[in-house]
Amino acid sequence: MASHSPPLDALVVPSEDYHQSEYVSARDKRREFVSGFTGSAGLALITKNEARLWTDGRYFLQATQQLSNEWTLMRMGEDPLVELWMSDNLSEEANIGVDPWCVSVDTANRWNKSFAKKYQKLVPTTTDLVDEVWQNRPPSQTSPLVVHPLEFAGRSVPDKLEELRSKLKQENARGYVIAALDEVAWLYNIRGTDVAYCPVAHAFAIVTTDSAFLYVDKKKVSDEASEYFKGLGVEVREYTDVISDVALLASDRLFSSFSSKSTKDMEVDSDWLWVDPAKCCYALYSKLDADKVFLQPSPLSLPKALKNPVELEGLKKAHVRDGAAVVQYLVWLDQQMRELYGASGYFMEAESNKKKPTSETAKLTELTVSDKLESLRAAKEHFRGLSFPTISSVGSNAAIIHYSPEPESCAEMDPDKIYLCDSGAQYLDGTTDITRTVHFGKPSAHEKDCYTAVLKGHIALGNARFPRGTSGYTLDILARAPLWKYGLDYRHGPHQISFRPHARNVPLQASMTVTDEPGYYEDGNFGIRLENVLVVNDAETEFNFGDKGYLQFEHITWAPYQVKLINLEQLTQEEIEWLNTCHLKCKDILAPFMNQAEMEWLKKATEPVSVLV
Image (cartoon, rainbow, N blue to C red; front, side):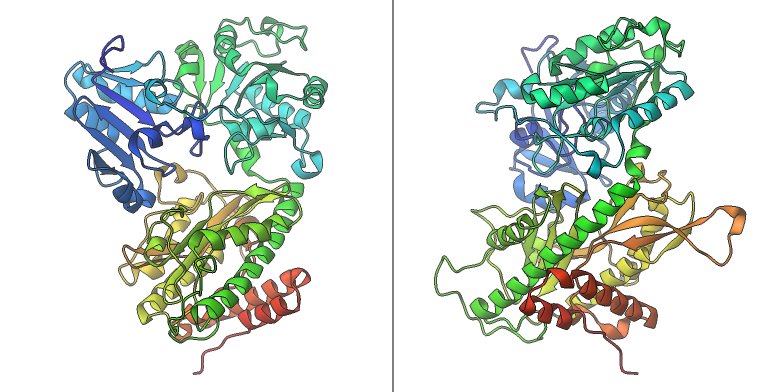
């Protein structure tokens, strides 16, 4: 920092990579390297005499445990925003460095505005300073790109390009710079393994009204893939060429060998270029003429979020196979806990007899049991890997919202404590995400009350009917209300149903997917979460006020809820009917995947319940 030109008073180390991804490859985990904090979201600030880390509510407890005493934890939503802290606490005319590849246009613009009052300056560093001190930095991945078959994608690349170009024309823009990895993968129907748990390859794309480019390490492009891109008229260039090509695009001099026309001859006579300020890095944006950039959310976000019929069908099938794996896991775990630990088990409610496994090798840990779950998933058709590290957590570890068990420190399974398992997989036909919380001994009355409140919120959200134009943010209260009744809450929001500002203005539409995942976390004691994936569908309602049309959710996740953790007398008749219907469907849908012993267990786990009046 001292030897940089100009010398830096502070350095910001974001979590994101060159594509503004939340989940990044091992070599891009710069913030983790400098801070020791392993959560997926956060930002490190290093000044001449202190170090601070900002993160959100999912990670407060984890950050407290992982940060050394050289670091100060800044709690987002409670402490000042990073830009306000910097502008208030750093000196006038301070130089604040950041790698311009790792910060979005939105963020850089917001910081510049905040720094102006004290003449502070955001300095794009010439190299990433963390990389310069990071010895043994993991190497780049060079795994090959894979073409995603149309039978799973459901839409062809020419079809997607045509829709994108019509949107460019509509907004009088002549090109769009694509930096988000999932958007590049979706648009060109390609997959990769550059980022653990995410089926993407490190790549950029540029699409103009008459040409299309892909920027990727050419070592990843097989002869077969090369022919595929040729057939689509997509020109493949080196990953590092994107910066010079964006400059060429800005000056109307970017031409493709597949197009005979120059940008001058295009249908759209325009100087405007489209950039998504939340997804494009400042390094690329700085090569454009800011006065000729159309800064708007990506034109690909909505078409990608609206699942086509093939994708929806695949997603539902993937969830059935995945649910079967989860139930097979619960059957196995129930038996192991009873045999090795003397637990009363999934169905009985009694304290364990404190039995212990006879050897170290027989011992079950959070990690060994999650490995078993992975092996059950891996046996299912179209399995490609996990969709995130399994959150397999016992007792107090379950209170860490994004807990990840490590071999040297993970806990042993305990029949007298709650066990929370949040897991998912990538299949060729869809991605899954499911959470169930169970107890193999005798849960306390408080644990039952909390589980029941979480279940009531889960049911309320899943059963919601709402007018078109409603955002997930508006519906979020439904999942929290039963917890609020007791003065309880949680510090996370489901995907698109969230208390975070970015989710406020996204109206839900038919064929989108969301997750329904309320929870409750008591630091030092236990954590509870229940999570299903939901598909948004059109709803048939008796009336149609304002001619808006109404929407509802369809659950596509299949695994039972543990009845012994539920205070049935706290459920309404409607909630009991929902539970019984859900369990009956679960039993019927998963039956073809079960052997006799598993089926007996599933029948017992899904028996109808009632409350004696």
